[in-house]
Picture 1 (cartoon, helix red, strand yellow):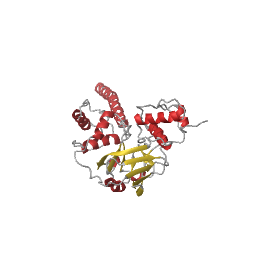
Picture 2: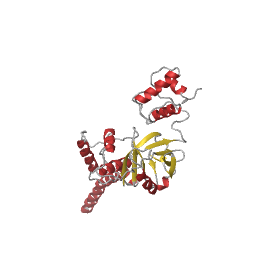
Picture 3: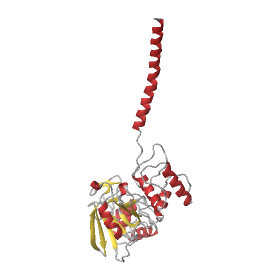
Picture 4: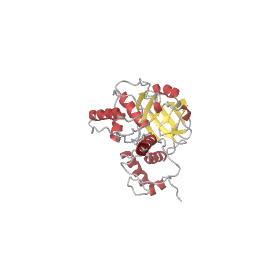
Length: 321
């Protein structure tokens, strides 16, 4: 009888001590199941670095695709893992930067400017004047040759929270076969505040909608037709219902050195008012400052060369009420 009692006590103690261990394992598993890798899809020069779980998304895929394109041994998979961090570190060493494996805005800009290790495709040698016009309102891309429309395609553009940048840009980079959300072709634009481009897609159902993180998506079959026709340097004008500035906006002080979408609005309005400057490229440089001063002098405003509320109002960019 005593042996039976001892046996029962031993079994009971075993059950008691095993329950917490099993429970702890379940909690750990539940925690692991709930952890989802952070996604970085926006291309406004996001900072990328090695962490656990690994960062994932279009931004990582783009970095990997560019590294592969310029000769690094890496296969894009959209995960910022150890191999990706090492490739970035080697790239940083090769370009005189701190080799910490962190993709900063400086690394982004340098990476996008490096020439590929092999030619993407032969650019057109035509001397005809080409212009791409993208209207985010109608979600269309039109190619003009010597002011005559020669191609028209449906596109997807940026969502309201990640809009496609209005302005006057140029094609400054071309790439083939980047895959994932970038489709079969990529044509990068020189927007100063992020990585934006015209590219194919693995989501053809999104064409004709507001769906992207700011880039212009095309059917792969369409971008493959357009790509060989577009040499580097081709101007790209992005408008909304034919305009590059809204009818009414909140005035924000701008001056030389400023950059961004609001600078495009000012530059575009100045051009509409007949004041010539180079392009509405979002960079508040010497020409924009001079153009603002010129406008201010001729409209009896303080000629500071800076955008203040009085200048916005005089230019008809905010309500006069």
